[in-house]
Image (cartoon, rainbow, N blue to C red; front, side):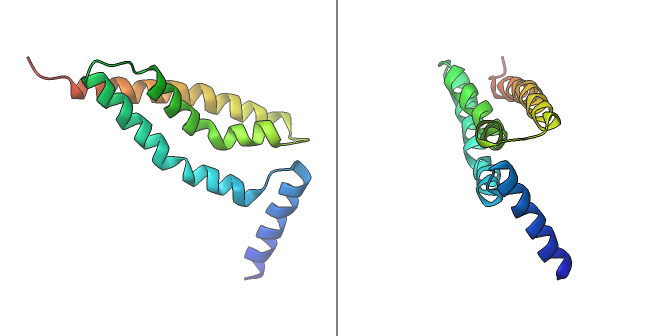
Length: 112
């Protein structure tokens, strides 16, 4: 039990030091999963109906990077490598979302 208390204390101290609330970060992290998935479904449905997919794709990417965006905007005195990880997440997330959507688009096409 002491380990968990010490761990939580360390996290909250880091949060205060860097102006990032760990509870808010966790809420953003886990709370962004349903809208991320919903945006992906929205994009696939729009693709099937031959409607525009730009807004659903942008929404999907936004929800993917939301927790990192919170740290990038509100964090202070954050180490350079944290920003490097955020950039990596944005690049990898963009690539990953595009690959997933392309796969789902191909699966959703009617067979000829």
